Every structure is written in structure tokens, then in C-alpha cells.
Image 1 (tube, rainbow, N blue to C red):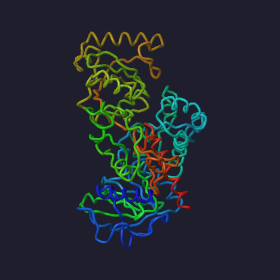
Image 2 (image 1 turned 45 degrees about the horizontal axis):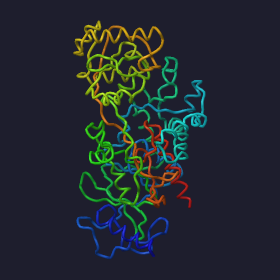
Image 3 (image 1 turned 180 degrees about the vertical axis):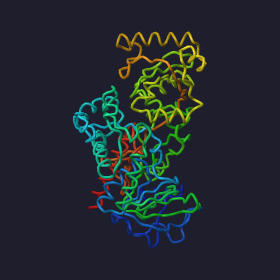
Length: 499
């Protein structure tokens, strides 16, 4: 009786806030798990300003978000023959995954094995797990393990079954670049080569896409069991209700929601967001349903506003300097530079490079960024004096920086910052690109079970709702864990639909 009363009180509060809608009348009793026995909302009851529930479509699996996590979550259900619908608030598929750098850390994929690179995900996991445990950034090592292993499965499947194109590892494997990284098509930034085939392949297998629909509310039956989602049609500004047996929330992080950032990441509240669409709607909807946030105060990734340029250091030599021309960081880690720039309150910093980068394995992306950001580019410069003048930094300081750097290159050790990859000297003509630090991917998210089902404050699964990608706290920093987490949800939904 007490549990039933608490549930009814929760529903009253949720409905009053407009966070959850109750399907009453003829819709009662249609909960997928048989939970509904009659509508708790009386005929005529309504939330002010909210239209009555009117299901216009129905699907087996409803996925909120069409980024890499959402599309990956669709793979197993659609291949199992279930009706799958992916919905996005934007007028295009792909979310913010399409503009990502595309560096995917994977172990033991077929592409790597074909290139003669040894390793398997389970062995790599055994080495990685103690580091992860020490950091204390995950509440469920079993879930994290599954994400890690499935990202390798994902890479193999999207290549073999969907026609996704990855850059040949032979393009960079002998240059000193990490062979644990897979890159899309032409290299850094070419995510269309991976995501467009996945998008089309899912459609060919029966999945459907609905665009310009912004998820606003879960719809529950009289017992509080989620049975669908209300959307706002962004073109016509009217509600659209879709009924579903299982719902997967893959709406991304909250880095663009200033109120949430101020509440949970106050240290970054004055740092602008790199992207514009990660508003945390999925977080808020899940919380309104009784879900619980976890690790919301975990520092968000910082990134340059020229995000792809920060990744060049994995594949070619650069020297990064402050506005005064002093080297301040090792250049072979993409997030270290913006993190340090923010810590030092630099405002901006420079990446200096030469023809080794322009003609290297990522020349497609280098040309793309040089042409796309001419206001940030200086060069070619025939000398360090000329480069310093173009960058408006003291020539003496810049030349002193390079003298010290070249001496460390000659000695074979970066005694200042410990750089390992591409510890090589640069030569004229010199180029430089200016960066500004931005907030990127948030890490906090919903508390879930090992199979990614949303839980309440007591750890009890909330029926029919699953979360993946940046909506959860264990999705990692790059694209591949988001893809792996999507597979976790997709596999779990397939199993649940068998019951």
C-alpha cells in the first residue's frame, strides 16, 4: 500500500511539472509488460497547456537521438527483425557525431589484425581496468568492460555489414602514430565515411528516421510504466506522441545547457561550449521519470574550437606555444592543451607545424582546416623571425623555445613535458594556427544497470527505458565507447523483447 501510494504521489508531482504524461482512458492497460490495469488519470483530467495523449505511431524500439550511440543502439534490434524508429530534434541524422574528430580507440579489430597489429580487447581490458578503477570514474566495471569489448565488435560490424570506410592503418602505422586508433575514411574528421553507410544500412534493414521532433516527455500508463514519448514537432509546433515497447535515450550530454553546467560544473561555467545542441534533454526527462544523476561533477573534456587540429599531434610533429611564444605542454594528447590553457588562463594558444604535417598521413584534414580557418592561420613563414612577427609574439622568446626544443629532440627526450610521439624538429616554411579553449563533452549522466536500464534512487530498474552514449556517466571520451554503449543498449533491448 505504501509503495502504491508513493508511486501515485510521484505521478501527481511529475504530471504537475509537465515532465511525465499519463495515458488514460482507452490507452490504459497497454503497458508493454502488462503493468497497466486502468488509467489513474480521470477522464477530462489534464495538465494546463498540455494536450491529451494521442498516439499516432507505434514501434517496438524508439531511440531518442541519431548520433553514433543512437544508431549503434539500433543495430541489434533491427537485425533481429524488430520495428525500430530513430528520432532526432535536428533536421538531419547524425547529431554532433558528424562533426567529431573521428579518433576511435579500438583493440583487436579485423582492420588492425589485417595490418599485422596484434592485440585483443580482453587482454587490453585487463591492462586498462586497474587504471580505470584507480580513477574512480565508474560505478560499474562490468558495464564498462562490455562497452570496451563491444566497441571492437562495433568497428568490425559497421565495416563488414554496413560498408563503413576507415582509413587504412598502413597510411600511418609506420610513422610512429598510435596503431590503437582507427580513423574514418580520409582520416581525422571524415565521419561521413562511417556514419552515412551506417545510417543507410539501418534504413535498408528496416529502421525509420523521424526528424525535427524534440523529445519533451515520457508517457506512462496508469501504473507509471513508460509506454511512449511525447515530442514537439519543431516545424509545426505541435505535439506528437509515439508509443513504444522499449525506449533508448541517446540524446547526448549537457555541455550546452548553461544552467546545468553552472549547477554541476561551476568551474567551467565561464567556458563556452564547442557544440550547440547538447542541451541535456535526455538527462532531464530521465530524472523527471525518477532516474538519478551520477558523476555530474566529473570535469567535462575541454577542447580547442579547432578540435581537429588538436588531434594532429598524434600523427605528426608540432610545437604548441603560449601567446608569449613559450612551449607549455606536450603535443601528443588532444585534451591536454586546452586543459592546460584553461588552467593557465591563457585565453588562446598556438600550434606551430611544417610540411611534415601538411604532407603527412592526415593531409586531407590539414588542408581542410587550413582552408576552412584562414583567419586562424599564419604562414608560410621562411624563418622563426617571420613566424614570430606573423603571430605577434616576441621573436627572441620563440627562437629560445625552439632552441631548447631542438636540443631535446637531439637528445631524444622531452625533459620538460615528457612528449613521446613525434619528438621531431620542425623546419621552414613554418605555419601556425590559433586556438581558443572550449568546453566539449560532459561525462555526468544517468545511473543505469549493467545492461544500461535506467534506475531509480534505490537502484531499481525503471521499466522499458535504457540509456547510452553521453546520456550515461560511463561512455568515455571518444566516439568508440559511445558506439559500444549503444550496442550494450541494443543487445539488452533485444533480450528484453524476447521475454
